[in-house]
Length: 179
Image 1 (cartoon, helix red, strand yellow):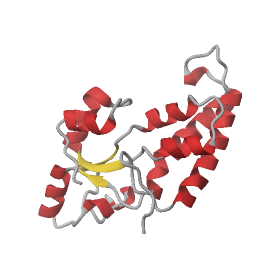
Image 2 (cartoon, rainbow, N blue to C red; image 1 turned 45 degrees about the vertical axis):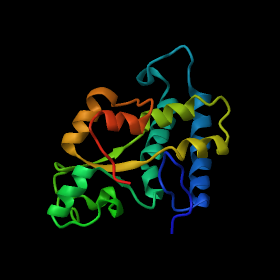
Image 3 (tube, rainbow, N blue to C red; image 1 turned 30 degrees about the vertical axis):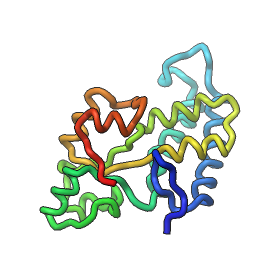
Image 4 (tube, rainbow, N blue to C red; image 1 turned 90 degrees about the horizontal axis):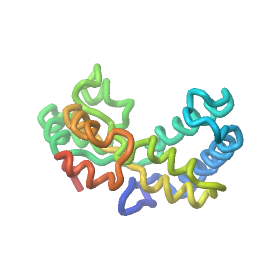
């Protein structure tokens, strides 16, 4: 049963799991800072150590959805899922898409990070001395939603890697999330 949520973020399985994830992310972020050459602006030109930790941090942020109890769903995606007799999308994980959700080539539905992973990663890297509590606060702003591929193309036109107000950006792109 979920017991942790934020008004602009997902419902997490538990505070303990979220705290453990934040501790791992803190260690990775500290190593990222340790190996970064401030004179080099492009990630691809940084040291192999930096690139390793940068990728590890990106992966940790991308997979934070593992700790979400349920997901948001767009009106259009749920309408189509109902027509396809799939049921409530909010309970499906990304790994269910090709089998249980009847989308073997991932051409119908898209599992969208409402606040882009790159934005979350960059917020963590911007912390001078990242504390677990600060990372937890950032992670609590993350959330994912099942949307249609056509909706994903709309949001990516303007807001692929950065969304100042993630929920408003979705709304401005014509994507209405169910409560």
